[in-house]
Length: 457
Ligand code: ARG
Image (tube, rainbow, N blue to C red; front, side, top):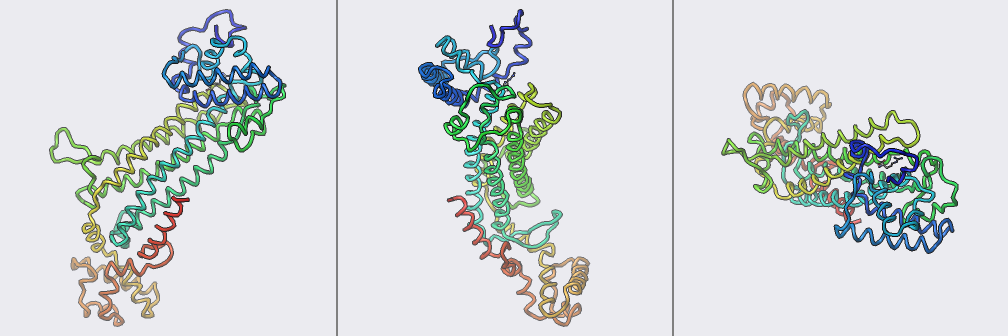
């Protein structure tokens, strides 16, 4: 019979058992469920709500069950519905009436909220470590490429020269914000809901603060109805992962472009590329593409839970059981993508000469010609116009700006002298952008140092 079967005269249809059950996907929370139950039982004993000896036996038996699960000796049952009732059933099988005291003053509604919070709290820490590994590799790439000049783009049109270090450190910034968001989400995850009961709290004198402290929570929830029906924390966690995936995906998109024949800025290591079953010459950036693709899937997970929650009246509704597949899928996807991304970046070959060559064509130094005139007293808007006309002539005659002779330059402005060539060399273009946050080596090195400090903190 079901643990809740008292008022029923018929068994659940097998189809419904299957449909209703969440054990397939919530079994992974067994450790959190048991930890939560141990704390709850200990508190019940301490408060004299159940005999202390019973509490002790419950705690001890739960410990044994945990060990048996880890040893692969336990088989969960579909008709025990979910991880909570599976474990409670095993407990009762082992110690009978004493086990039946565990669920005093508790509902699965506050229990599942507790388990998921405990689970996601631990995952926040694990994910943060993985993000830090990614950031470390970005720092390494940046450190080796502070002099690797490459074109910077806007509208995917060549814009101004930067360095690969500067480009990569842009992603470092994104991932450090992801870390910050994760830490922030963790604060709202780490609040203890037990004591909310089914929705209206409980009549027993539970010591909620004791349970919170035992389980390492920073606070307890302040409203029992919210305590059982809040899934903001899971949604927030998924939105953090979504944004993380967006960052991975943007970099992957660039790597797909950069590894194309047209760009040839990088070459993926053979161990991080795949071939074609028909075209013998192919070497495809499947890894980068798949990470980009899986980003859509994580967004889907986020949307799924947002949509599930949008019409739910207070308090708990069974719809909320759908939270777990979405949140676990998002988590598993990020967990899968991060190390693959990190190693792909770590192993790829960077073609510095091609990058530099890419930085020189396409008038990436046009702004610097304009700035040259500004330094000689021409108002910027006027110098912009002058250089625009130069570019038009260069396009017409199929040249770069630094291919003009000094006489040709002077046709546009008498102020231009021999030093123009030095002033608009791509190396100068980068070096002169020596402003905090800019691409000049000194600035990027300063950011790399800050990055190292952040990772070592
Ligand atoms: N498996 C359920 C879930 O994931 C646990 C809570 C069930 N509560 C209930 N009243 N049916 O949400």
